[in-house]
Image: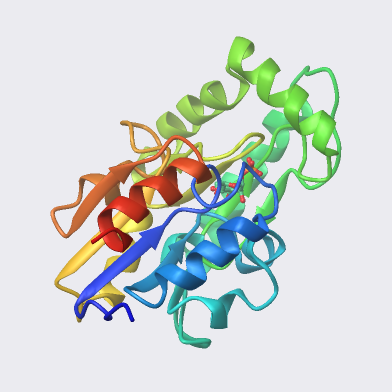
Length: 247
Ligand code: M1P
């Protein structure tokens, strides 16, 4: 029987690492994680909120993994229990929040893109998520926007403007998915979750967007982690097998 490696945790990004972007986890990956969990502690850190992480990884996600960090760890769970939350509203204050939300909504109202749907700003615990097309779009519309954005840089243009206009708020703008970007205070990136992992001497982080500007970059580069770049969920399984499961 495989022995549990003490002091070691494998920590995974969600989109592109455990699942295809915004898709549900496969049975194969679920079974793999079960086997891996017999050898090392396992955790998940996603930019999305818990609702979306649960849609992708299953409704029992907070008990399936030792740690689940939603919104980069701004909402943190250990063994099924909530151990910490952080509030953007309290941190930057109601007036600043209103100013940035008003600016974004005006900008998006004037934006000429092929289609728009609903929910242009999603208010979360520790961040806001901004989507020029609107989060209510279908999967097909989502894929189409991603292609359009690659050519027209809709998101990065808005991010540049926000960086300039709200420089005094020291916010980070993170383009981690297909149709939106996350806005949160500096330092509230995925490294935020590491404060909950002091008991571990070896933290292996697996993510696909580890390049500079990607939302896995800071935690991948952190001196507290061993960073691993993956290209797909299959690659995640392959790299974990050779690191933790092969003798
Ligand atoms: O996990 C990456 C991102 O996933 C979603 O992005 P999108 O809807 O644009 O594909 C969002 O939940 C976003 O917050 C998150 O960072």
